[in-house]
Amino acid sequence: METNDTGGKLLDRLGRPIEDLRVSLTDRCNLRCTYCMPREMFGPDHAFLPRHELLSFEELARVLAAFVDLGVTKLRLTGGEPLLRKDLPDLIALLSPLEGLQDIALTTNGILLPRVADQLAEAGLDRVTISLDALDDETFRKTADTPLSVDAVLAGVDAALAAGLQPVKVNSVMQRGVNDHQIEDLAGWARDTGVTLRFIEFMDVGTTNGWIRERVVPAAEIHERINARWPVEPVGATADGSAEGASTDGAGRSEVAERYRYLDGGGEVGIVASVTRPFCRTCVRARLSAIGELYTCLFAAKGHDLRAVIRDGATDQQLRDAISAVWLARSDRASELRAEGGLTGERVEMSYIGG
Ligand code: SAM
Ligand code: SF4
Ligand code: SF4
Image (tube, rainbow, N blue to C red; front, side):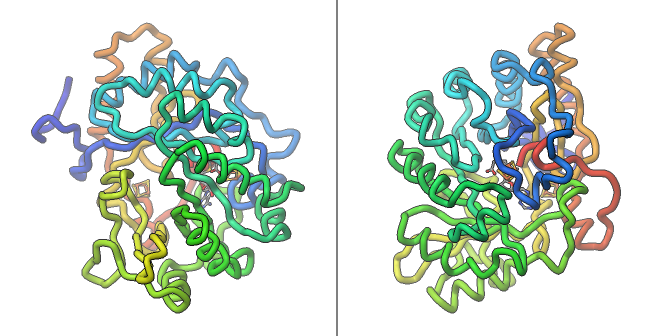
């Protein structure tokens, strides 16, 4: 295997190890969040991936074992909506014995969680992150483009807590003029419920979500509003006084949120400043699409076909070599380039690559 001189660690061209892998299990979803799968683009005529194209659980277990051998310690199963993949606990059961794997997490919209949370926990799932952008039905229905009510997601949060899939995190993507009036309500709810909230800046992932910079609510503003209501202090401060993701919450080094602690003991809140304070320098994250393409950046236009490698009968060593070759050549830093004014061109959709 080709390696660079790194004390055994596989490092990319900017010296970043591969530690965290996000795995999209499907490109389908039971919601149509306007910033992710706008219905005009993902309507009845949209060609979703046919089933036989998706990696089977056995193929996933094999390819993910190769990633773990190469240094990945943290897996996050996502999509699309990963709970649409039938028998998901069977996949978790295949993955949880992998030696070297420290953390298996799931990102979900939560709606199907009440049915399977216990089975997922029993199979070895460590944690869940549930996406919820508003607590009032009107805003929720508008952002998720669904007739369902917020209660459907809250039932998922309850199920995750009851199943012990802790710490339960909740992601809220903020868009100005759409749901930013919910910042304090969401923070207050999370404090009361005992979940860890992460506000996420609206990103220009893909090319169909109508992203404009004016819609981004900057992390600094979110911080200011929360701090005005419930004073916070950074968990691990940076030179500019903002908080820096530390590595002490079970999420490990790949935590990308700026973390803040409530001074009154109300727990923690995080903000992911992907747009206004990019963190490419420390990005240790790879992504695998549902059909087995390896992407080295959320904003990449193309992936590297690992499914062909395994379906062509490669040995485990050949599979590891294929992954290593891609990582060794990696030099992505798209969010930094955006900040420098240079992000243009084709990009893959988030529901495809895995959020
Ligand atoms: N369906 C699952 C869910 O919503 O949690 C998993 C997949 S979803 C693509 C993963 C995460 O990406 C969600 O928290 C979602 O809010 C976030 N996301 C999607 N599009 C985004 C965008 N344009 N900017 C920021 N976050 C986005
Ligand atoms: Fe579906 Fe998640 Fe995208 Fe919303 S954010 S449309 S729930 S994949
Ligand atoms: Fe990592 Fe790409 Fe995001 Fe930068 S833009 S943090 S390299 S995924």
